[in-house]
Length: 289
Ligand code: SF4
Image 1 (tube, protein in one colour):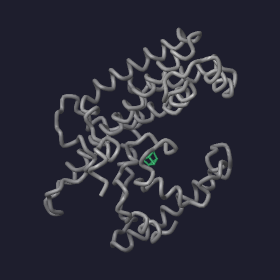
Image 2 (cartoon, helix red, strand yellow; image 1 turned 45 degrees about the horizontal axis):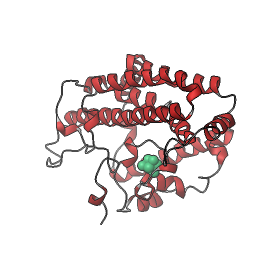
Image 3 (tube, helix red, strand yellow; image 1 turned 30 degrees about the horizontal axis):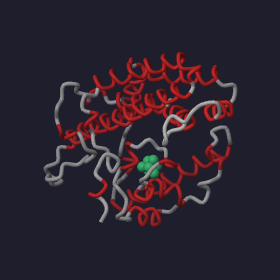
């Protein structure tokens, strides 16, 4: 997609700004596909449905990624040239080194380690309880009652597997700006994804304050979607326990690990539950014209 096509697409007023920043990326189950710029760009790609492009072990995946990188770099260069910005004059070496240090610290954080441990426990559980993925589905579908009208055991297994690594990724991101995390803060200014202060003119903007606020917003938003994933995973394990009574006792460990994750996430990010994700946590009628 070239710059003009991208700009035309972005100008669609139906899109909810930034909705994809704090969603769970489960587009197949998302009610907001028609309002999501990211989904639209992916669908506009003629290769969108090629399964080889979703396979990390396939060379076509990496070639595609390289092409996306080249296109993005070209579009950024064009925008910089149009706005008179000399990209070569910007030295980001120190910022990149700082970001690397923050990411490494986040990965070593107790919460991040707990989330990775949960992901591996889930991996081992499915490996030990079911020989193949087909077994998961067969066992979940046969010889077990539907958990409810809306949730089958197969749904529950899919939900658990969708979120098992996602939780760790989002929590690590939430932790990656330690300087911006203030556990005692009750500042409501960081409970929405509006990064720029509305009333300040360009001359009055304190950019350091804006960046610090943006980091706090991003930490809360990332922790919020991790909590959503923890809650849904907990419900799904509960459903699986009801549906597969012979395996119920083996599921207790997962529920305990998720409960610890939830408690510690709420403690470290006390404002996260109140964070309003664009579109996803807002009243739909506010958007529909
Ligand atoms: S908001 Fe919905 S459609 Fe857009 S990326 Fe997230 S899950 Fe996919």
